[in-house]
Image (cartoon, rainbow, N blue to C red; front, side):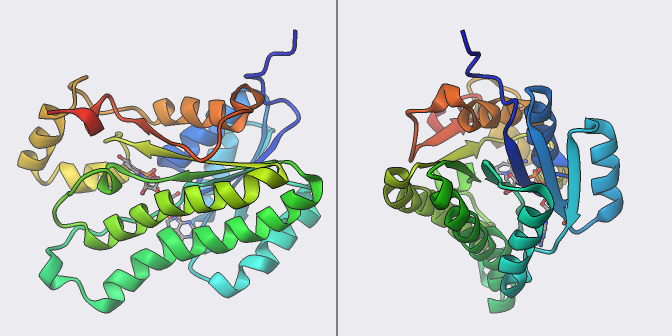
Amino acid sequence: MHNKFDLTGKKVLITGGGKGLGFAIANTMAHHGAKVIITGRNELQLKEACGNIGTSCAYHVFDLTDIKAIPLFVEAVINKHGHIDVLVNNAGINMKKDILEVTDEDFESVIKTNQSAVFSLSREFAKRMVQRKNGVILLISSMASQYGIPKVIAYTASKSAIEGMTRAMAVELSPLGIRVNCIAPGFIETDMSSKALNSDPDRKQKVLSRTPMAKLGKPDDIGYAAAFLAGDAANYITGIVLPVDGGNAIGF
Ligand code: NDP
């Protein structure tokens, strides 16, 4: 019987795959047979990540805030690697600041990386996936779109848009053979969460006290969820937001 959890033969592009959750997603998928292409701005980090993952990993340096260049970037990736089966929109930035201190420029810069780039990249890959009537697009939201978290207004706006775009893309693209799903990570040990939590013990305590499993998650926890949603085992799943959060979203 075909193992539907196996990703052999699938090509996956993961934005921000050089570290944190993106690296864990790339590494997990590669271990399940996928060929992975990771992107980011930091070439050294991408090179090192590929070295750790092995020969099934390639990288492209690209800054997602260069929105106008996204169609050319997608063309270059496809010219080099052939069609892409799975797009993982993982790259993102956070900004922790009191709401009254957030400038329009601050707000715009988070929206650009976390929302506008995700839309443009998804649209460009979807155009190609539609031709093959096959593809998977994954997005990454956050607990910031499940309930109110102070000091992250722009991040919350962008991640709430991600969940809305997941549903909007799923209804238009699923009839054309493309599944679109979202993972909502809870608080996972990465540079991003360390920055937000380690300098703020009260915030960290608050997170842990409302997480029924009483611990932070590991990047691999997200990697496994993404590998499942990317593969044939999830063939009848589209338009969902899957919390991977130790119960944080339903915690008291
Ligand atoms: P990290 O800060 O560890 O990594 C972020 C990644 O995004 C890096 O690889 C970075 O690569 C890439 N990136 C950022 N800006 C750009 C850009 N302009 N162009 C290309 N790549 C970019 O974050 P995490 O791994 O923690 O987060 C990954 C995703 O998961 C994000 O979308 C985040 O919002 C989400 N998330 C994380 C949670 C957590 O607890 N860690 C919780 C909920 C959601 P480079 O610097 O090389 O450009």
